[in-house]
Image (tube, rainbow, N blue to C red):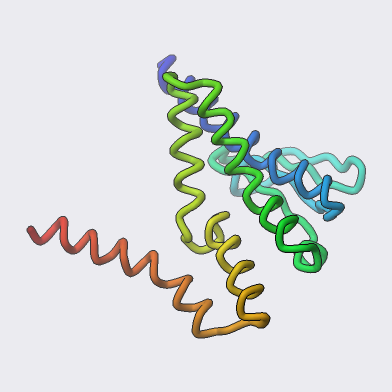
Length: 164
């Protein structure tokens, strides 16, 4: 029982600290935040402070920060990447500080997992920002290819593992 409680608390703490990285980076770059939450599903509790709606949801299996993306997109590339990658940076720091523990390993896994360019993950968002900057415009072909390729690679790996 205590192992399960440790896992849930460690996972929740890692998620919240990851999102706090985005939160403070956005604030530092003067990008407004509209909502910050822990969990999915129906809202259990909420409070509004300093223009941000803080919410606790029924299932504590996730965390999120909603920010003004149009403002973020107007910032220099370095600031955009700083805000988008701040959660990963926090997870890497936590992994180093807690090295050799379950919490350290969990943070390392979260950092690496968020770098993979799956849709809506930090790595995907950062890749989109970079592509748009390099191409100086949006390119549906490039963006759809970038979005679908990790899923296709995963599907091919799954087929390979199950067939042989």
